[in-house]
Length: 190
Image 1: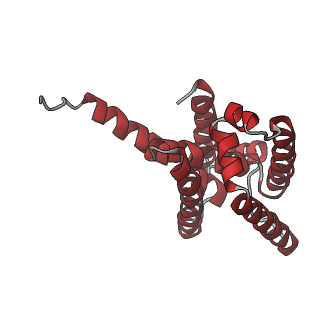
Image 2: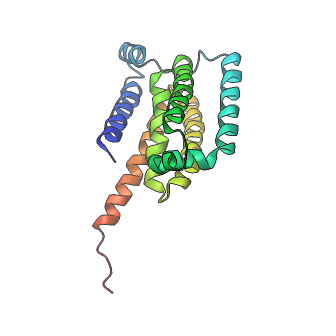
């Protein structure tokens, strides 16, 4: 991927693994946890309700305007030629994302919010050949990794946000490794 993608992956992997490696240390884990501050323990029922409303509104909006949003995401110049006000759409999407991400960071911390924002998209890009399928695969990967991560964290008494982000970091690493290995394999001669 791009340099920005690699930088984001390194930040998230190091943050999650740093906490997991120091979890059993009496002082190290507390200090790293305080610096990274990703915990879902402070979430309240009102937070869950707010995110349910945000997700419902976002889902309905995306479903109703999926063709326009897809065109804006894949080819913004073509969207502008077809009459979509690209600048208006960019501002509206940025405001909605800012509101949603800001609330997510307040409730569950920077590491978990940033991890769920970046890593599923990186993983889907490595798994899917078409952009449209990435729109479906990325959220599915995020939900699956979080469910498995939370179950593993509960079973092994580890911080759930860091385990989930660690699993999300493993997916693009695995898909990138598989792609690299495929590139090393000699191709059959016609």
